[in-house]
Image (tube, rainbow, N blue to C red; front, side, top):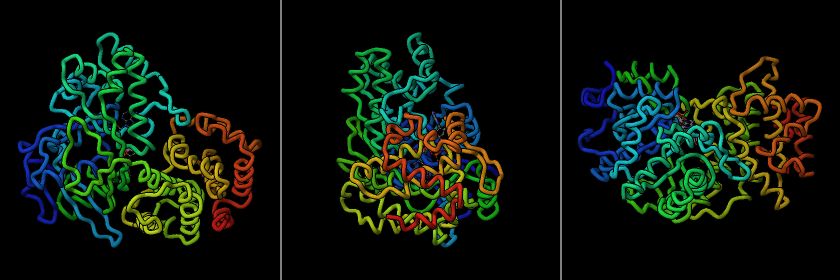
Length: 493
Ligand code: NAD
């Protein structure tokens, strides 16, 4: 029988289950973008907290904004919003627990009024987000809000009393209504992998509000808190094999379980004027300044993933662990992290960096997580500019090494041709797919054409030092292929 919140007592005793019922907790957080990561990360911390009997007025109502989120609604609602987290250790052990901190799910395209209701409810004191980098409508280089079609539609909707559809539309609509009703604003907590996610969200949300009403924007800027966070837990997309394994081995029939590694980390800026759950009780680091931690994570973990994703796929690998277990790629990756990424970091209080890097290599090598290179290659236009190019810019400024990073950018140019080294075509998934692929094709005869898009590369195209390294790398990729290039570049500089 299908998993349900009320029937968890009957599950196999090896499966952890909530020790509290839905009636024991109440929504205090509305989360936008209930995907794999929210369910493996924040929801698990909250589940731990509720299990301790603490902060039970901080349960989560999830909001799905995109048309495809109807799938998540159809998975969650028939289960009373309970779902299973499968944690896969490097030794192959799998542990499963049912998480109960998510108590309701609203599919916004069909229930806009319900979404508005929960967002304006005074008991909702935090609105959190994992809407992917692309959900922020921000130019990666300037940090400015980009008013695309979706945002323009929402501006119209808000001006005419209609229902918004985007994250910013929903947030600004609810904040305006709360202000008018004399309700305190909620805190907006971005948990996406974006450097300075709090400040960036503040800037984008207030810029959006300003287009509607400058007074509202000034109030948002003054009254709403946007704490930054560094979040970490590798959470690959769930596969049918995961569902089957959960059903066969543990008898849990879950329409959409989550799969993740054992490691988890959450460093959070402690700025919550309208209150917050007691997250420090369950291992969250609450700090005055998240910046050094997020820099460390974005430039080692996320940029590290990018460093092997395209080169790995071009070399014929499928999984992250295959690349991380390959001594040559592991050496390249370790070199990138130590010589190129680490020197650009600020001192990170309480963290042993060499140890952090070693742990990362071990986490990447966990064969049971089965994270795919394909996942890391999605939406590169959001990832390389966010994770890798800041390393390049810092190294340009300091005169430090950047050869490996240049090879990675060249590998993107090669990858975006959409054809592997074996001649087989593959799908390039990217919001800017057409432009990126067109430039990649032109780069066959004019290598710098790939760097032309200033929204992605800023002025890197004008850097003699970077373009020399990039051209050399692209030429090598074409002449000898990805693996031999990695070999040649592994010990560079
Ligand atoms: P996912 O594909 O499982 O879920 C993505 C969610 O974001 C979905 O609910 C989707 O509807 C929503 N979304 C996407 N674009 C949106 C938009 N334009 N507007 C509103 N909602 C939108 O992905 P995930 O693994 O949950 O990752 C989501 C984000 O979490 C990542 O982009 C990253 O910033 C962060 N994160 C992920 C991991 C990980 O290992 N998966 C680790 C750390 C941080």
